[in-house]
Image 1 (cartoon, rainbow, N blue to C red):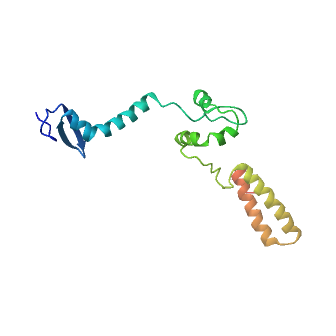
Image 2 (image 1 turned 45 degrees about the vertical axis):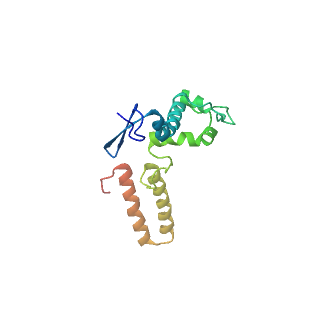
Length: 163
């Protein structure tokens, strides 16, 4: 078979490329292959081989200035040396944190005040307001505060009994 490009030499290279699911074949001689595709392929091949064997690392490995932990230590043990390591290795740690926790920002607990400690604080505040309202003879407000106190007591202690 003759080379499809120069139509002079015998085709020694069968080049197959699949683009968008369609197969394209070229039969080329070695000189046409080198001329048309060899330079691009040799660059791609050198990049692939460099990826397999790794290029010599020029940059120095990061090291925590406080505790001396290196990123390679973290990769080996999974442990950081101090809180400063999170700042030093931030770029390297974010993908792992995102993969493990789903997000990288801490949003804290919700602002709801229905936990027991919050209810106790609210109860104490209402009781103080009730005392002031009674001393100042504001009985309407005192009744409202008393109802709120009863609701919180019911929530905290399960008071279903009426007095």
